[in-house]
Amino acid sequence: MGFLKWVLAIFTLCTYLATPTLSDSLLNKDELASISANFLNLAKRTDLFDWMVKIRRTIHENPELGFEEFETSKLIRNELDKMGIYYKYPVAVTGVVGFIGTGKSPFVALRADMDALPMQEEVEWEHKSKIPGKMHACGHDAHVAMLLGAARILQEQRDYLQGTVLLVFQPAEEGGGGAKKMLESGVLDNVDAIFGLHISAVHPIGTVTANSGPIMAGSGFFEAVIKGKGGHAAIPQHTIDPILAASNIIVSLQHLVSREADPLDSQVVTVAKFKGGGAFNVIPDSVTIGGTFRAFSKESFTQLKQRIVEVITRQAAVQRCNTTVDFDTENRPFYPVTVNNKALHEHFRDVAAQMLGNDKIIEKKPTMGTEDFSFFAEAFPGYFYLLGMVDETKGRFESGHNPFYRVNEDALPYGAALHASLATTYLLEHQVKATTQDRNVRDEL
Image (cartoon, rainbow, N blue to C red; front, side, top):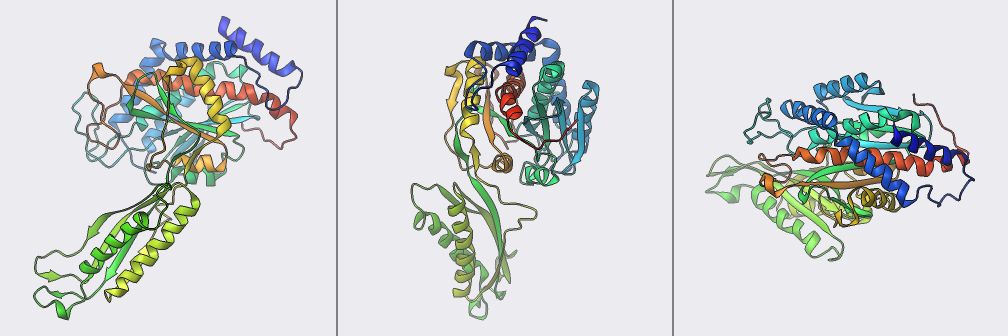
């Protein structure tokens, strides 16, 4: 096969070429273009495309929530077994980490999240969710299918990989901090870099959206119980009204952003939960409020957290109420800011430009949304990007977390090819670096 012979020649060049400086690139544009084009052609093969579609639909029909992805994980492991890919399981309850290549450095990881959402699907189609109240409404079924597609491509060329590719199938992205628990397992300790993607219902198919630096906010959740003294609504003087106290607290929390934060430093405090009372004429004993806070720096995030506690407790005291504030980080860990590594950004742009064209790379503006890929990117260099799937001829595509959410499966080959190309070229570029540095490594296979 001509492509494999060509790749082998590149690897031989990497091995025997006079040692360059670490900043030198081993691949020129023609070589990079050839790798990217060939991977996209491989990913568009009918047999591979149909296989990815089948996997995605099977997972879509059987959605599972965070840390409950047992059947999804079983499907992944079965497919890895068929491909002869070594893996470790369980990682963080249901997670799977596969290994392709030499088992030695450099180590580059590719990540796909697996969990669904607690929503009822409203899309009427042949492969609608079979589980009432659960739905893949954020594209994670497609993410798994694309990473398995990349695994097939990479496994076919495993003998030519100059390092190790880790396939990270992650549980509990939707609020459970699955990435954090995978890191705590230690299975990713040797990773040099990680890439992740999210399918996008905003951008056209065949495009990617990315940028370097902070791209998504850090976030946390809070819940407060305001305790007063209940009684009849007609004699409020005999009560201590927690609803009035909670109302003042909510208004005061809004001042944290509008009057205390730098207008050029994006921050958000939102109270989205208010529970108190069950009758029209009874003042309750207590009220529970809860919400989220977000920021683009650790300093701003820490300051917001401190002020949320102060505002809630002191405003409650003004209204003669007692209160407790809980951030419940054990079940809902704080998410760091998602920061894309600058060097990986340049690597991504090179690969994407050669595969899709420079005009298909869209600059991503920072958003206040969060992504637990941030845990990976905080531990080692990481890069997260959006993969477009919009095709106007196929109707409207709703955004994620919508009961009418759909996936354009024509985008699957692009994700698989980008995964495979980013990993392969990263290993090529860093093979000399790995062999010229004195590092302690272990054989993962």
